[in-house]
Amino acid sequence: DARVTQTPRHKVTEMGQEVTMRCQPILGHNTVFWYRQTMMQGLELLAYFRNRAPLDDSGMPKDRFSAEMPDATLATLKIQPSEPRDSAVYFCASGLGQGASEQYFGPGTRLTVT
Amino acid sequence: QKEVEQNSGPLSVPEGAIASLNCTYSDRGSQSFFWYRQYSGKSPELIMSIYSNGDKEDGRFTAQLNKASQYVSLLIRDSQPSDSATYLCAPIGVFTGGGNKLTFGTGTQLKVEL
Image (tube, rainbow over all chains, first blue to last red; front, side, top):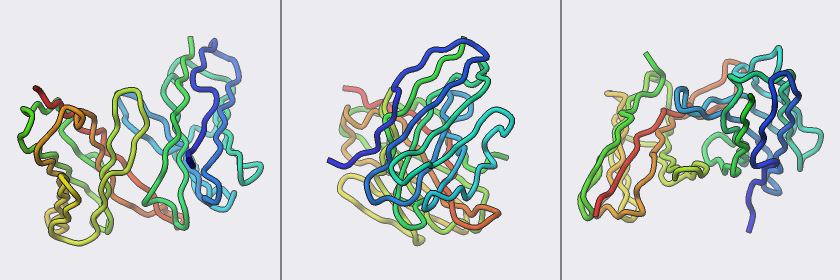
């Protein structure tokens, strides 16, 4: 049963701490997306990788957020330092080819920054 | 103006009725459109795609597209309580650097009542 996995599922941390979220895309998928979802803003695209190369991260606050794909089976999203306004659910999604159409979402990481 | 507009709801319909979910978008260049369903506390899942003007039917679901009016809708016939979820409209747009992306609306919450 192929699916996107994300860890951790929940994270509570204090302001100023570093947070790292991990995503394992579906085996064989070559595109990976990171989204942030809040009640107010909905789903916002943070970063987009194709064949491990970053194609777009314009939606990501560059001063504190970073996204990488060290290999084809792992994508990471890091926040340093974290702030209360970063509290949200972070989703990873993967797809094939151009990848943007059929995206398969992971279960998400619910982040709370106090 | 938001890129994708949806009525947040909740839209309440009785069981067995037709639920009509609407979406307008601002990018005239969008060619492909997707509907995702998101149950509370879960991740979005793709339920319908539509690429051409007109209607596309899949089981109890019908997607309708009118590119001239920049309008896309989703009809759910014989609504069931299990259809209660938030429905996200997502046209495909283009990154300034190439590649394409989904821009999600904030979603319409549907409640199907017994």
